[in-house]
Image (cartoon, rainbow, N blue to C red; front, side, top):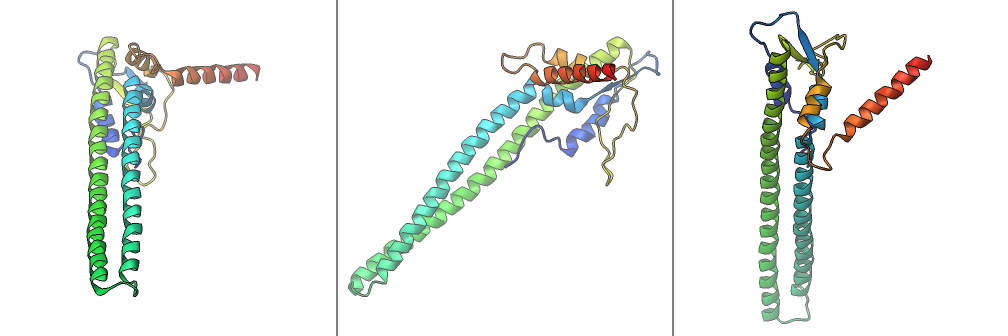
Amino acid sequence: MKTNLHILPRAFLALTAAVLLTAAAQVDTNRIAIIDLKRVFENYWLTKQANAQLEEQKADIKKKTQAMADDYAKANQEYKKLMDSANDQAVSGDEKDKRKSAAEKKLLEIKEIEQTANLYQRNSEENLGLQVHRHQGKILQNIRDLIEAKAKAEGYAMVIDVTAQSFNELHSPVVLYSSGQNDITEDILSNLNAGAPAGLQKPEEGKQKSGDKKDEKKQGRK
């Protein structure tokens, strides 16, 4: 079960095109901003919180599924023993019938455990999928609102996601070139994470900035 908010489905990429091409009235049509939406989405504290909750639920599902698997294995062992004892030539006919009857009941129990486990697995996967969809919708709406507000406030005619990919067989980038100017990624991310609870504050951003500084130093030495 690999349900995870880091995995962006086609619906998310399709939404990107509609969400991020935000036109504002009475602005300079030449002003275009860019954003790394994937980075914003993954490093938004709400995404991390949702992922943590999903991981807890998946761990609980795994624990319950394992318990059912253990019950299933145990019931199978008991069924085998009952069948072996029912075929014991040393016991009377009446005793054999009793043991066969017990084995049949155990077989019904095994089938019930199997059906319950399969139903639980299907329902769990469906519920997790619905939660992922709901969390994504909420997170993307928050990001969209902030992008739209910033675009209108600063006079951008468009905000383009430079990490978006096309749906062709090559999955090539939608934006084939960008100078990197007017990149609002960090501003959006900083605003989104401004009220992040303790423990969910943007460690990746720090790493990214640290890495950028190291690259700058290397380039400076060259």
